[in-house]
Length: 546
Ligand SMILES: NC(=O)C1=CN([C@@H]2O[C@H](COP(=O)(O)OP(=O)(O)OC[C@H]3O[C@@H](n4cnc5c(N)ncnc54)[C@H](O)[C@@H]3O)[C@@H](O)[C@H]2O)[C@@H](O)CC1
Ligand SMILES: [K+]
Image (cartoon, rainbow, N blue to C red; front, side, top):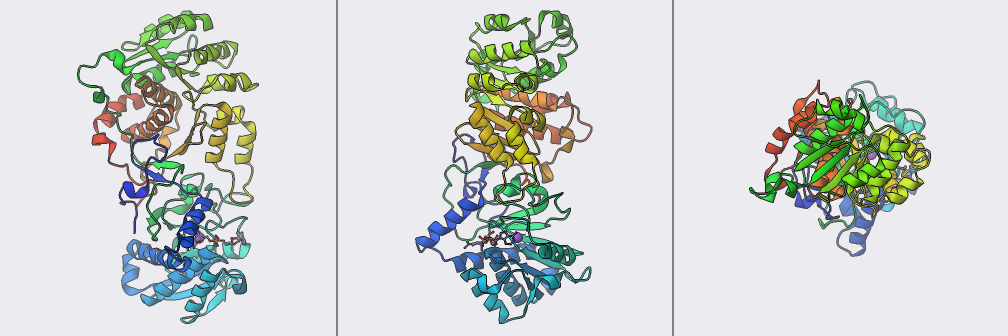
């Protein structure tokens, strides 16, 4: 079995060539089916063998999560759905019984319509015990079972689960350890969204056992909460990289260590980032971004406020340089200095005509530009000129609200209840936004999604041991934009700069802990950078716990 300790190379890595660090491919249901079908068609493995491996992996993961039950044999309820996910359940039921567990099996759906492999495994179970109707599980007394295997639905989920299954899961799970086969039933494996009106159930699984690679739905939306711990089991599919799969990155990209440029490197080797600032009393956001850019290794960083805010900024800056920029014309003059190779704009800029003019002048300069906050908000009424001016080496860093102002239809699709699977995901939204904007889009959240216009996509998950809820604090977004600009100044490509920044941002927040304010983030960077593993090889903790 491959799990969180699995070798980096065995989990795929860098199919896009855009992230040179430890990654795991994230698969959607269609891609997973295609992989299985190609192997079956080539005669390399049968559906029954895959199902047997899947069921065996569920039992192995349960046994290692609950060794005391494994020793004495517990009481298990196995809830099987109508398809192959249910087939995994029948295999698990047989194998648990073989290990001395007292197993009760409940089934949803018509046995006569089961797919052949699932039906074959049901019949094998029927040699050992009865298959009860799913409704019977709803009568289970609290504590009746030590473990529940949720094998209702997996990647085939296409609509909200029947009430009978929900009631069965709720009743049987009371006091039990819940193990989901592939995906907790009801959550879409492509999006992590729960299908149905109203909020998702409070209880998902304690442990989810998935096969070959994690699904997108394990990393996105409500998925990380619903799956609990995640074990990825090898079921005999080839370990070759999967072209164009979105990647979850588990550690920093190589080359973050500035010393890579050599000990005698001139400061200009590390680039010069310019951060546009707002007027009097509005400069804090830009200063935070500038400090982050400098700390992450840009050689030089300049804050550029309007002239009236020069004194205020001068009083607050030392290593960061200062240059007044009154308007778009002044910005063009400043950018005559070709050594300025990266820009960050939007923080505290004011979502007005001046911000629009500055943004368009910045984009026209051809520099790698990171656009946040007001640089996005200024185009809410009419994003067309912004999209026309953006290029693939620009990065937009919207939070959900900013995203909704620029891409209202995509935000609406994310907000509306998901009633059919596969549901529209945050990854779908970021990809479509990147395509429309012609720029790299980083959609912020605990599940940060980074997409470029060519469809390349990366996910960063701040969950489990990497959860940093205190990062939701004023100014943290400004620091993130500054990190991206600083890394862009150092020559990182946009997708990689955005990914590295997202990783460093969370790493810095984890180091500071609760009580964090945005000012702490740049100050935590030296310790984070000092602790970087050699060549970026080591991974951060598996974000699904364990
Ligand atoms: N050979 C294979 O294809 C393998 C599949 N595996 C398992 O098979 C699962 C996928 O199996 P399936 O494609 O059969 O899909 P599921 O078992 O997830 O769903 C079965 C079928 O139920 C129907 N359905 C969807 N939502 C419904 C709802 N809310 N109410 C009622 N019916 C609904 C759909 O027609 C769907 O195809 C994976 O998640 C994995 O657990 C594993 O056994 C590994 C091998
Ligand atoms: K399931």
